[in-house]
Amino acid sequence: MKTPLAHPHARHAAAAAAPPPDILTPADRYQELFETVQREAVFADSKTFVDCAPRDAPEAILARYRAQRHAPGFDLRRFVRDHFGSPRPAHADYVPVPGQTIAQHIDSLWPFLAREPHRHPVRGSLLQLPHCYIVPGGRFVELYYWDSYFTMLGLAESGQADMLHCMTDNFAHLVDAYGHVPNGTRTYYLSRSQPPVFALMVQLCEARGGPPALHYLPQLLREHEFWLDGAHDLPPGQARRRVVRLPDGALLNRYWDDRCTPREESWREDMATAARSGRPHAEVWRHLRAAAESGWDFSTRWLADRRVGLPSICTTDLLPVDLNAFLHELEATIARLARAAADPNTADAFERRANARAAAIDRYFWSPAGNHYADWNWRTHRRRELLSAATMVPLFCGLASQPQARALERTVRARLLAPGGLATTEHGSGEQWDRPNGWAPLQWLAVEGLARYGCHHTADEIRARWMHTVQVVYDREHRLVEKYALRDAAHAPAGGDGGEYPLQDGFGWTNGVVRRWITA
Image 1: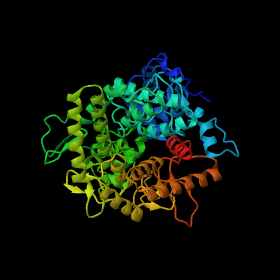
Image 2: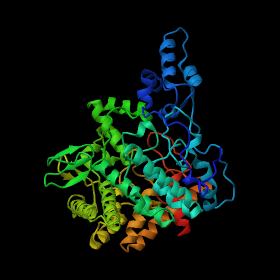
Image 3: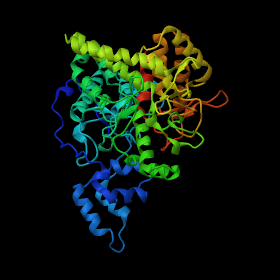
Image 4: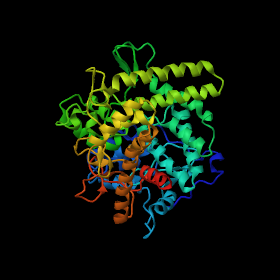
């Protein structure tokens, strides 16, 4: 059903009256029923069951299952159908209008991707929020963290600045409620976050007529505490949760997840990957979950051996360049806002943190031989020479010198510039965050980063190639999709493929970046 977009006064209303869901995940709540449903593939997509809404109290459903499961003729699929309501695709009722421009299509689609908290089903896995929000599309029917920043870029261009403000307030609420922004607003996402872009959100919100960024300083500080938890008294060469202290004392971050079980939304896939690995299963699951926190799930970027594939995943061994660049942005933002709030002690402390991180990023992530930024393996004490689009994030965050930016521009033109935009990596693997796929957020970060350093020729070329790719697919299929195959000149642009699930359309971050660039 179409949901109206935010009324200008809606975000000042009280939180929705529906009771908040239990923070127990579906696996916690349904125990052996959960495992049986996933193992027996009652639903083709592992995510479907964990998004189902129970028709009765979960405790009663589990008790009923235990009482009935061994009875002659017990039908698991009928039991699940009788006791749970399945989620619908995010914009199932939307019908494209022939002849619309892309901008008109996006503007007409936003209401179908909007959600009101008072319409949340009770007793399910959805986390309660105080304000309306935009979901990505397709199977993704909840609010996602880093997706939303790129979605928000386009909302104001569509005349929906108040929805942008509502979403920023929702993220502040999540930090207040849980101590961090979870990967998405489901209980099974609470054990991990995503790339920390809340600082970018509050700056965007302020620029588009929302509350001043200073209003969100308490939440920015608390998010920083989450990412730096465990840093106190951490010895050199050791790691704790998301923090690693290197032998020279530098403090940098990695992706992590507080659980080491199969991801509930990809349970069958993670069970299969661990079974193929020949490694302790909990170790593999932790690496898989950490890669999900990165948003790049999955890529050769996280593999110890791309010939082996996903069973060789080693995410927590790596210090990602983009994560640390975003955290530098967070620290620099806190320092600036604390200075504005007449809190010199906090401002000075965070300036020191930001300066130390900037120096470490230059020392560990910049490859003088390759003229690009790359992730660092803190266990082997070596920089990974694998080139990915994450190399552009230090430019976006203003961390490069002018000579580094120009050298990186040449590297990217030679190795990552594809006919349809900026390639994600240099290698094809069947994983979705590898060639041939390109993604809207990576195009935005690269174009804005290059433009920041005056590299306008390459910035404009990436943007033009990407927009052409999107336009060709839209003209043919009347939709915007999650990712695109950046094919060579002999093939028409197409939606991307690979990964754990079919190509999704909608699609929040593509809508946001494209709508912003149409206006520009």
